Every structure is written in structure tokens, then in C-alpha cells.
Length: 332
Image 1: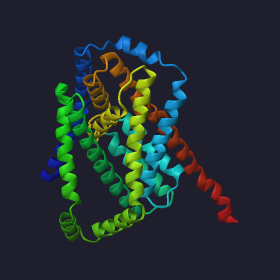
Image 2 (image 1 turned 180 degrees about the vertical axis):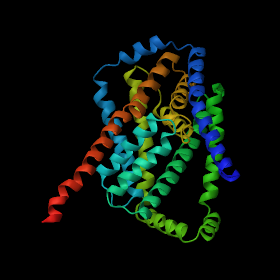
Image 3 (image 1 turned 180 degrees about the horizontal axis):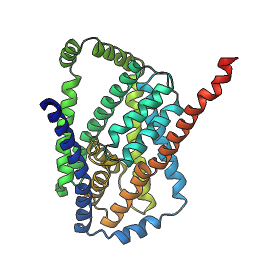
Image 4 (image 1 turned 90 degrees about the vertical axis):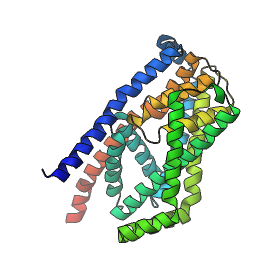
């Protein structure tokens, strides 16, 4: 191994090692914060299990509606894909990202295999991944920054001294600035000049997609976050907690911004801690706040793992069976 390869391998080990170590660190922070704020886990469990079953169909419907909006964003970034396949990409990617360390990167491989099996070429796939990721980051950070500003100004901002919220707010501002710089035309032209035809083709494809379905992309992304707010609000109502919807929507926006760069699978720990901290700052009792956060995350995190796994298995079985079904026709 030459020195350059050693440096690259060393950086890879250090980077991924730090990411893996972040998982127990975040979980430790969650446990300490919950204990310090007086939320007992047994009480939280009784509160969640005390939810009336009549709320479950409503919550499932809202969860499904949110994913349909998310699929609209996917179809805007990948023209020619239907709603069913867009939903499959959403569920499959979430299942991998939520269940494995560094699952966010692995989910790209699963999504790429699915897109390739549907007949899309590498150029369309690259354009989709780039446009989807950039739009998701911009929407999350932009919506989260507005939500955090409103929460601090009109909500119980003076009571928020939690390190996770404030650190994540700073990270969100940095991400927003970086996205703005990268989106600037001058930087894009410089990148295009240096990278050559590949980036030029990518910009052309992304430009066509934005001109054709840019409004759908923005409305679907914002609609998904609004439906997440409705889902969290309904979770709280089912547990007997009443808060202004705009405040609950702001909490979701902050949570989305914080988990833009997930240090843990699916943002586990960081998302729950953010929701819990914001809700308790808004006056919700610690037990109810944690119960609402866990119920919400059941739908937006845990439930997506078995559903996405079933989608992946179904796609795999169908993909393996397709050549066998087509073989007789090819020989005849």
C-alpha cells in the first residue's frame, strides 16, 4: 500500500469510526436528558400503551398520506416513474437508512439497483440522486430555519437552553449558507468548467426536471413536512396533549433540520431528543412530551423498517422472476 492509499484508508476508518461512536454517545445524551427532566420510562410506556385504538387508523392514514407526498417529490426528480415505484423507493431507502449504521449511504445502492432494474440509465439515475438530495437538504434546512426562528420569537424561546437544539440550529445555518453558495450560478459555472461534460449534462437534466416539475417538487416536499406536523399533532391529541398546530409544525421543522445529516441510523436519538426538548420547553409535561415523541417516531422511523424490507424482498423476487418469465417468449 502506497502512502496515498494509506492516508485514504486511514481517513475512511477514522471517519466511519467516529460515526459509529456517535450512536452510543447520542443515546447516552438522550437517556441523561430524559432523566434530568423527570420523565420516567415506565410512565411513558403506560402513556403510549394507553392510546385508544381508534386513533391508530387515523395515524396510519396520515403516515401513508405523508409518504404519498414524499413520493411526489421523488417522481418530480425522476421523470417517468409512477407513484407505486416512487413509494417503493421511499420505503426501501428508509428501511436501510433506519436500520443500519451508515445506512444512508447504503440506501443509495439499494435505490440505484431498483432504478436500474426499471430501465433508467446511469445519467437519469445520477440526475435523480443529485436533484433529490439537494432539494431535500434545501427544503429541510430552509423550513427548519423558519420554524426555529418562529419558535424562538413567538414560542418559549427564552426557556430553550438545550445543547442539542442550539448546536443543531448552528449546524442548520451553516448548511443553509453552504447550499446557497453551491446553488449560486457562478460556482455552478466554475464546477461545470472544471468537471466538463459530465457536470454539464447533469445540469442540463436537472434544469429540464426543474422546469417541468419544479412546482411539484417544492409543493410535495413542503406538503410532506406539513403532513408530518399533522401526524405529530394527532399523536399528541391522542395522548391528551393540546398545543397550537403552528407550534407543533415548528417542532417538526426543527427536527427535520437537525436530522438532515443523520449521525445515527434515521437520526435515532437526535430526533426524539429534539422533539422532547422542544415540547417540554413549550409547557408539555416531560412524560407526555416523550410519549408523543416516541409515538411519532414509531410511525416515521420504526414502522418504515418492516414495510421497506417487505418492499425490497418483493422487488427482489419480482426482479429474479422476470427473466424466467420472459425466457420462453424469447425462444419462441
